[in-house]
Amino acid sequence: MLTDSHTHLNAEQFKEDQAEVIQRALDAGVTRMVNVGFNRETIPSSIELAEKYDFIYSTVGWHPVDAIDMMPGDLDWIESLCAHEKVVAIGEIGLDYYWDKSPKDVQQRVFREQIQLARKLGMPIVIHNRDAHQDILQILKEEKAAEVGGIMHCFSGSWETAKQCLDMNFHISFGGPVTFKNAVQPKEVLAKVPLDRLLIETDAPYLTPHPFRGKRNETGYVRLVAETAAEIRGMTLEELAHITTQNAIRLLGLK
Image (cartoon, rainbow, N blue to C red):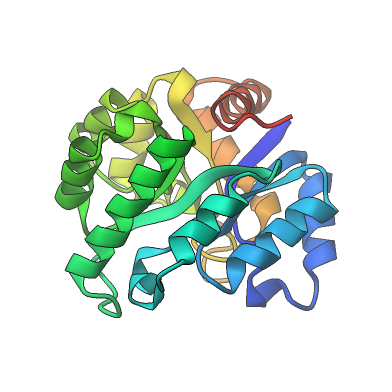
């Protein structure tokens, strides 16, 4: 009963064997997959995937790295797609100060506009945060994101940052990096997150967990994240899988 709360099965890396990757995930016990559409190319193919498989859901949003490419009318397009029965959140949205393709002011504007849209529609949001903790927190507070909550995707911050996100109604999601031997901070945070706010993910094809680090990630590898999380929390894999799946169902309205 595992749920991968954040994957990119429509990525170019799965072009040759997408169906096989999905089957391997099912064989590994993954019963629900949330596929993330994040720009003009990936949003339509993400929805198509959700329409093809009843256990796959989609998010729609505009990634901060691509913020500079967002055109007038794209926000209206995203809003129209949010009416689709398989679209469960707006995302991934946020800030990325590692890549410099999109200026910070453009990223921040696009981020704010999408939080405002989420509040208008009453939909949760999926947050991408790279090297931008303080600005993310400030914008979430200023835009009253607590009204809709959502997911801090592949969380990499401190417990202090996590507490502020929890106070704003967000779930904390962990991916492959929590399995790395040197991942001291993520393990410490995972140990403290309230169980009813905990999610797991792969971000496949990126951020591959140990022992496959350096190779292409797959949705089925969420089981490795779950095993590490269960060990950290002192519970069985089955208990951890059940709790994180129920959290995803409740937050995103999954079947």
